[in-house]
Length: 338
Ligand code: ATP
Ligand code: LTN
Image (cartoon, rainbow, N blue to C red; front, side, top):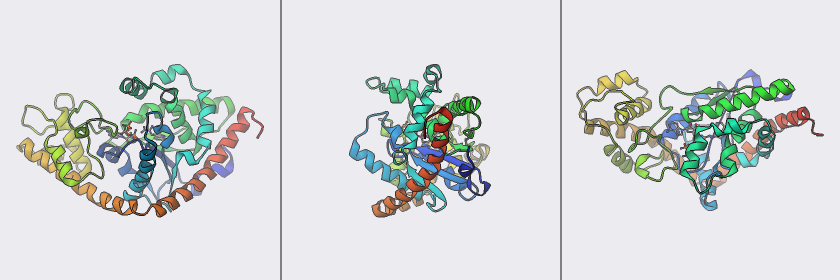
């Protein structure tokens, strides 16, 4: 790593990204987004809108464009300050695609075929198992490694991809000398794996075709309450955490604990003897209260595209300045004439 690419004032660097592949859910909020603003100030933070990753699944072009603005507005609405963080669009920084190509040549097919997200997505989109879906984790590694990232806040489902990024970084460093910081995951204890409301054995996902399975960050309160009221529970009548035997109730406890910042045992105590109906309404209300300020700010920002464009432009410049230094170093190390 060259000197000019070390982080400012010795702060550790945080890097994360979310795909604009749908409207964001409560799962994305609790597993990822909500944790981002807590880190600003103490770390040097870079947050990306991973639009290149989204193309691994078919997207409607107009809708994709709108979702890019929407994700940026959510980053800002959750409290990310564009002066303190780098907020940018992946395709604005050409180094991502370039480094991804290089890293493809240092990643084995065997490693990629073990990725559970690839297996899940291939079965969901059996008519479109494209090469991008297979090499998706390499692009993710390029994202992270370009910025010399120390920590990567993610939900549980991305842990395997992060481990692969570490292996690729290590492999490259061993071959060519210190080039990349080897990143570590940051996974919060609560909220790291929010499950589907109707099918609690499956994770809540924004690309789910059944809209009763998720709650959107910007969903209207009446609809949020309706979905919680009909969330799947079990035939017992006890608010007790037991992921294996009571996945629905455990998911609701987890959601309530996360949005109210309480511990699981405290939530169990609070609802001792409560009926499921009562408990589900309390969870719905707590979620509505937690999301209301985000939604309000989001709507205000979506009405000001000029401002969103300005944030993207500044982000592009700041991100490119960091990424270009790493890519140049990599090009030199592998023997390209630069
Ligand atoms: P898709 O359905 O399009 O694959 P997704 O909803 O799984 O998307 P991503 O864009 O892949 O969302 O993820 C953004 C971030 O949100 C990641 O850090 C991911 O780990 C986290 N995340 C996604 N779903 C959940 C969930 N159900 N619980 C907790 N965190 C989640
Ligand atoms: N693969 C991630 C999104 C993503 C990401 C990244 C997360 C793309 N690049 C870099 C962390 C760091 C996902 O599907 N959630």
